[in-house]
Every structure is written in C-alpha cells, then in structure tokens.
Amino acid sequence: MAEIKDRENALIMETTKGQVVIEMYPE
Image 1 (cartoon, rainbow, N blue to C red):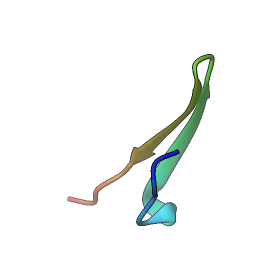
Image 2: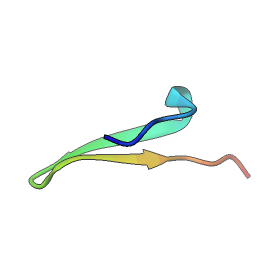
Image 3: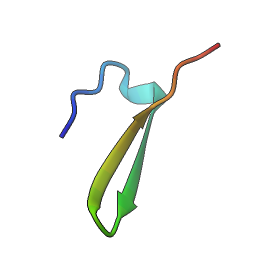
Image 4: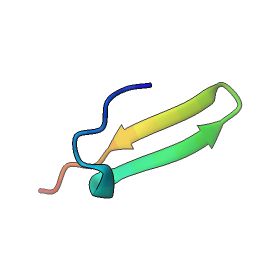
C-alpha cells in the first residue's frame, strides 16, 4: 500500500483488484 502523506485529503476506494488510494491535491 502506498504511503499517504495527507490522510484527510486521500480518497480510498475498494475495487475488485484490491485497495486503490488516490491522493487529492488542493488547487
């Protein structure tokens, strides 16, 4: 699993292939 720098701005999605973590970067 990738390291999440800012957990509050991270979106975790459960997929059939496993756990996908998307880091959201504020504009």
